[in-house]
Length: 383
Ligand SMILES: *Cc1c(COP(=O)(O)O)cnc(C)c1O
Image (cartoon, rainbow, N blue to C red; front, side):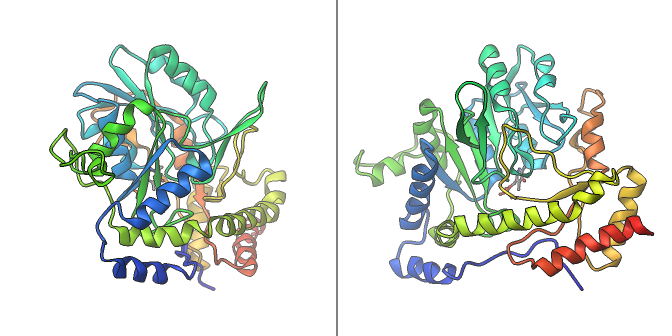
């Protein structure tokens, strides 16, 4: 049996909407489907303002401009993340200050943040790894105390929530809690359009400027709404908006979001149940989900007992035709940044980098295929 790591899922409506977009005669950005997607997110999750972008990377780049990063400003991000989280701020001249993960998950450890703050710190960028919430109450409290921006890298966190437990139990969608939230619709994420993303603007003061950056530094969006009679150059910006063709594809996915999520959660639970016994026997660890987080089943991972066993497990699964992959080499040790990093050890980040294995996870993986993967993992320990 051959099991790929990912397989993009098509709902069946994509080609139909693409056709409609083409026939409509407007295939550049901010067309009918873009607006349908914006409405979907704003109505369903209560985001104040959303703007589709060509990637989450672009959404993060917009965020870096919006929070006013200037050369020499410092931005705190977890070392265990994708390059885009850092690059977006480096492009504006920021110095990246890496924070370590918490003990039980790759998410940023809120207890480690405050000691990293200096007078130059401008923003904190928590990454909701696996779509599972960081401790947003603590992070927002620290940011408020030091007057910092919070940009949520919610690339993996579509349809996931932070749950306030203590006094007022309420759910808040990830990406809606910080000043800004950035999402991805890359083909490896839960809902997709090939390459795509979205910026959620939660701080009302940033909305008008976000729209201008989005359209090459012009007020064209306001012009199209009839609010001004000509549009002109207002600010810096770039071409962050995707073609309406991509938005049409994405809209077909959004209409099926509930079905996609339900199926992914089923797959996730199946992995969890089949592998629980190995965790009980302390042969490996399974994902840990805090009581304040929910699980959007973006990815499923196991944690090996040692780096040696991790290497052997990866080789074993490969030999069995299963594409399972490790994730995120520590950014503070990367060829690009190691000389710039301040030398602090980030042992938990390194632990996750050298112990975590992501298992195949996609809408169409069958129960038989999941059992095949789990049986091969069990077989590894049986030898
Ligand atoms: C996927 C991902 C990104 C980048 O998303 P793109 O849409 O491919 O630019 C950024 N951050 C994290 C945590 C991701 O998982």
